[in-house]
Image (cartoon, rainbow over all chains, first blue to last red; front, side):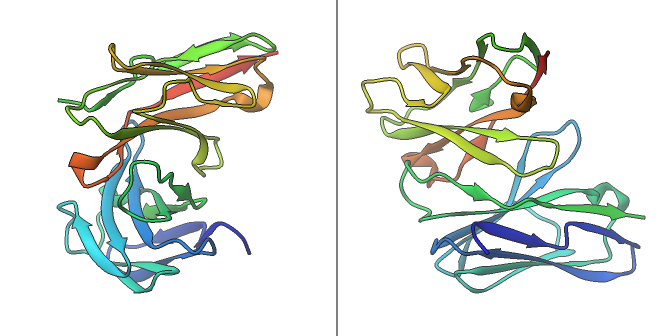
Length: 115
Length: 115
C-alpha cells in the first residue's frame, strides 16, 4: 500500500449506530488531518494531529471523536450522528504541521450517509 | 473575511486549449505557501503544484503552471493543452506561518473539458 488509504469507502448508518472511519498513511508523515466536505460547502477542517497530539479541534460536535494511536493511523469514531452529517470525509497527511511548504496528501475519502 | 477566494464556480474549456483558474488570497504574513489541488469525481484530492511566497519564479509542473502575482495577491493556475481527464474540481489553498500552518482552502472551481 502506498499513499493515504481510507476505509470504508462508503458507509450508510442510522442515527443510533456507532461506526469508525479509518485512515492510514504510508508516507512517514507526522501530521494528519480530518476534513468534512459537504455538497455546496467549502472544505471544513475538523481535527489536526501533529506527532500523535491533537493540535486543532475546529468546534466539532462531540458525536465525532478522533483517535490517533500513532503517526500512521487516524480514526474518526462516529455515534448518534444526524442526517446533516452526511458528507465526504477526507483524511490527509503532511510531512509536518509546521512549514508553509508542506503539501498535504489526501486519501480517497469515505462517503458517509446518515439515515 | 475569506482568506482564499476562487471567484469562478464553473469553467468550460475546449480540449487542447489552455485555461486559467483564478485564486486570490488574503494574508498579512510574509511567509506563506500556496497550493493547488485537483479533485476528480472519485473524491481524492490530488496535489498539483506549490508556490512559496519567497519564490521569485512562477512554479511549473508539467502542464500546470502558477501565475503568481504577489503584489496583487493572486495565484492563478494555468493548465495548458487541456485533456478530458482534467475535468474535475480545483481547489486553491494556503498555509501561513502566522496561522499555525493550518491550511485554508477556497470553495473550488469546477472545470469541464469539452472534446
